[in-house]
View 1 (cartoon, rainbow, N blue to C red):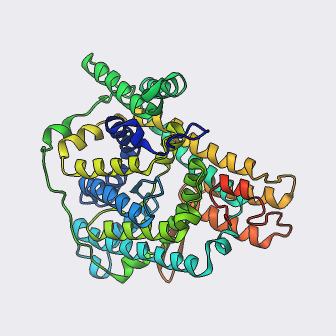
View 2: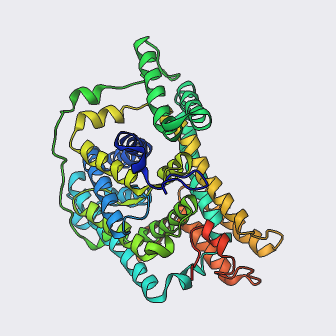
Length: 456
């Protein structure tokens, strides 16, 4: 059956092809803003010679499809650009000694990508450990008192970007948010399951009307900037480039894999909890890690950014209740096609930041709510000091270290993101503090809701 008692649609084919295409567009719009932001930011590091938006879109789409192959087509996850590696790109861009002394910024970029290739391959090491030891032994170190707060942090850590984007034009942000709420609560039929897409389309139409009337953002900037659209062609081959390897760049990028892997485990728990399926056991955490890691390496091999599972799309799953991975694969195909149509990509890229902010208000909050649900459904006892301490440290670390934690090892600067730091501290405290009241597999129903139950 395509629809379960909880109202979820698990086989979107019953809706028909046109509706599936709309659902795919919705997921593409959800990931688009954050995914293209990574190349935009790296261009600021590399003085305009950073990652390409076209290459980024193609690699995100192909990486998602490759991930689905590795995960046996079961996990409804989209892989977009990873923000965890931004610090690494900035570090490589600033290198000016040794072989990097006489390089242009464009010449340094392939070496940064080479470091990302190695970082992606490190995923395979953790996947092998999980495969050998078994997911049950590994997940003993990730009880709900650890994973719940981490998932909460995933959503809340993104909250400042939602507010920052929305503040560029609160009127448009409120329209986008209100449209999503209206269609999600009072929408009928297909409109009820595409609230994000409707929010984007209607608020963009309002922005176009405001632009036509000569209105501007509160800071005086134009609401819609079509300069990039006019300059872009209809068809264009993405500027792929082969990565290069250097030990210095590798030492900068490779350690970031630890952060990305911790985020991956948190995202897999969030997606599993959202969908109500046990993806950590089937197809298996080792498979999803392989898919994510190899997708990252293949992307960087041809000049793209690191990939990672996207919280934005998890929010769309929670809101639309359409859990069919086929819809995600359609979004991936759209992303690849857009990578070869610069003009259309620029049109979507011209979407005001305020609209992205209004949409993000809903999506990021949904992710945090999933984390709260995981804690509640697993009956985490917060009358016990150990549990309070673990949750408190995770939340403060995950939200407090906004710039991560940077330290130097053998002369190389390494940055741990806030989420990876929170995950590491949570796991260590859970191991060290006495009085652990959680036995893995003792509460199968609770474990199932967080996606890590072990079925007989």
